[in-house]
Length: 227
Image 1: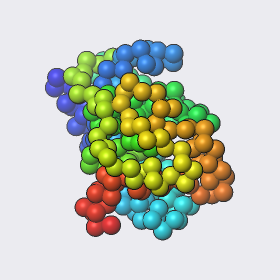
Image 2: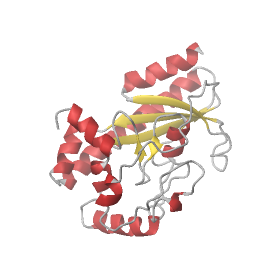
Image 3: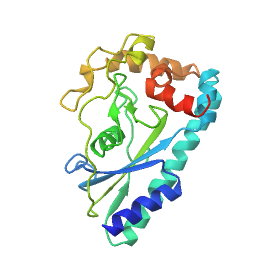
Image 4: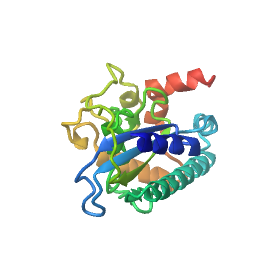
């Protein structure tokens, strides 16, 4: 699996914070039928988190979208790298993996690839939670037919009894039920209430990041960094 390690090292050298491999066979067949997924996790810079604490959403979104641009570049370079090895690959950029803002759902959710590759679990907020960075992350992915040794999937929440995100939700959209991979998203969050509020916030030039900021693992990450 030296090629797999080469790909992982290449993606990390480009700037990815974490890289994982997952079996996603059939999950994206409606638009690209490639069986293996590469999860890309990019920790948000401390600058972005400082903007959020100050509720400077204009600066935060500019910073966040800069990170998405980095992920897009990493994903496309990863696609090219894998193709040069003789395999097929498809970078799941934001334009290719278009998000339905009403449903807050991509064609193939990045969180699905991430949990299946052991990068983290789904918090009560329906955000991915990583042990290292909490939810202070951006996600990307690459699909490929390159042979991969899959990481161990995370199938149950590791949030324990923490309800920080649920308590912080301004519209009470988060349900008490903790995530596992046998549940539907609607079991843990009322996405209609959440999306309506978020869209209104975006239109006002604001944002709703309370669940991300209040996540215990996010707190731990920021405390380690002196924030």
